[in-house]
Length: 119
Image 1 (cartoon, helix red, strand yellow):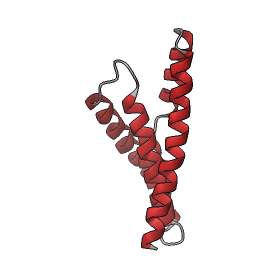
Image 2: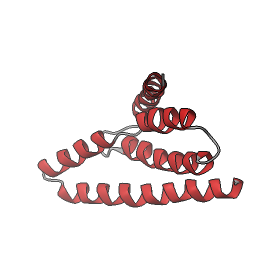
Image 3: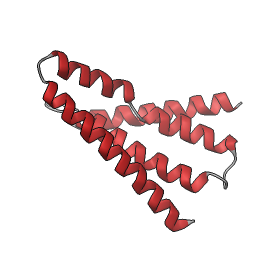
Image 4: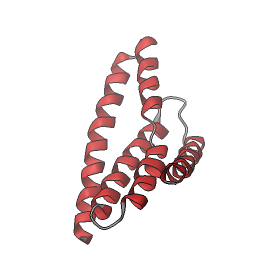
């Protein structure tokens, strides 16, 4: 049954990601992908810190793997970096990778820190 809940959660996360992508202009830079992945890192840090030890695996897995995992978009991030690189914009690709990783780590840490305030 958990597989079904993960799948339903993943569908919700994917639809939310698609909706965000439609609302943010990405004609010059993949801002939507960056915003999605950074906000997902924050959400996962927050949720896991609050939930571990307090929520059952039956709840944690569909939310963390399904909803939050379905929202993130690592493959799109990689494709965008590859596209920058193969179209002569390797510098933009390196900046995008650096900003994504650093901001993602800061966001995950921020989610963790915020959750620790409530525990």
